[in-house]
Image (cartoon, one colour):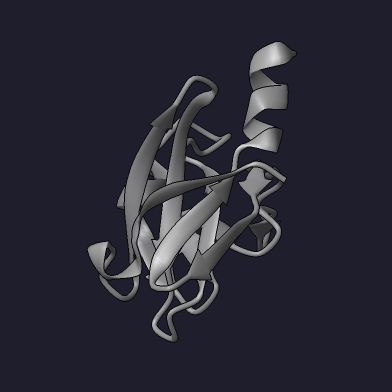
Length: 110
């Protein structure tokens, strides 16, 4: 995997998110209350809402536009809604967040 340092874990508040702009589009990076980090495309498939502005609860995020709920782990919509958001591998090393750029590179090439 090709890992890119995208910032410090402390740059994202607990139960919050930040946006990373890439050639393949914006990626929302989420931090849960227990300091787990997840990354997914920053666009709800329903109406294009910015998921990075949604509410993080547990390992889910609720879209700020129409309250669709997505799993941060799988990107799948939860409840009665159907759809999914692309997810990306992330890891934490020495307090820094690393994002796997290989899947993003494939999105640009497609």
